[in-house]
Length: 127
Image: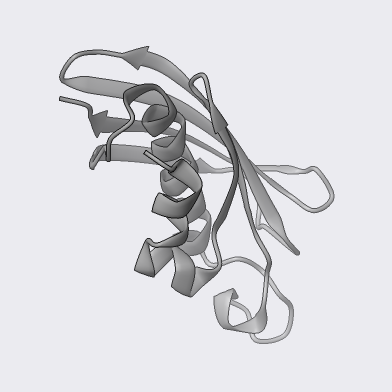
């Protein structure tokens, strides 16, 4: 499976501008360029929580796809927002468990100043 092509062809991630920049050996990274349409604040660009969540979910899935070579639908995801994300965002994900039916991934999200803005744990269907 061509991981890059798979995620480039995901309509919702494409709509938001999520780009998976790396996905191999249970690790993935990705980014999103911030723009006015993704902000919850009309006076300053601050990422809406749904944007941060989508970035974490997409990059988390990419980490598991790199091990399973197939789509891995999200079963559950929990996220802790630590700070408002300003500017471009990037995420790093690492597989915690890659089971025959379910996989678990931890994801950290940062803003362009390298401030840790969110921590997520995703559970995905692997089998």
